Image (cartoon, rainbow, N blue to C red; front, side):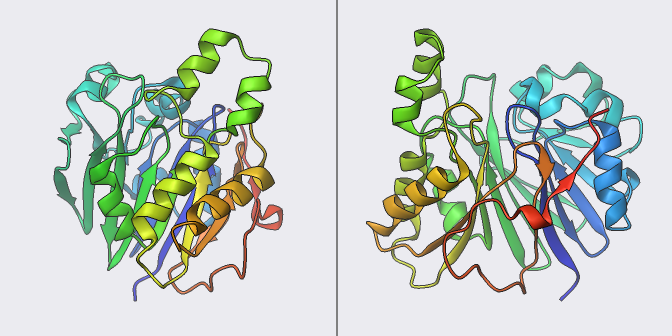
Length: 280
């Protein structure tokens, strides 16, 4: 098998980015970190921004596009997103590729599919990316489950899904009422229990354990251990055997390879594998 690996470079309100590498090339899902941080992370693997075949943008919120404008100066690759998302990114004009709901694009060895989700953005999406026989599905900002996305989650080797908040912590926390309502709404963010229940429904019929990266954890309304425990508990009600790992918010996270053994049980952030990245 060609060298395949996936790494999160940041997952949360401070900046989101994830790299999927296969056969010496890579795609970037969201560019919410600085170009310098991206160059540092790629260089560890012997890569550079010029080795990117595409930059996929889930939606136009700042924590997903913060580094995009400057990052486009270091690579000639296309920017992929829905029509509504690209309309909010004028710097991508002339080098953008529209991905319609459920539409698959072929770029190099990559099969890229945009998965519509419910979030308070123009036309947000998740992405399912496949290359060299490996599939990764990434759903980082959504307020409710998506039927189409569920099908791709079930077919994925690595699942990356939002577990943004603990519902009780959100209710009793310091946020103003309007922000609590927005987060908990169908156009906000998935709670730990919502993510776990959805994964249980999607994967409950499978006897094989599955690795899940929990993304976009709230610093105020969640904790890695709380998220891991809640997702595992909710999914197990449907018989799903999940091995969740909570991704670091401000650091590069673990590197996953298809040949890696699954964690033996639930796992919070594997700090020994984290990499601090520069912010500018």
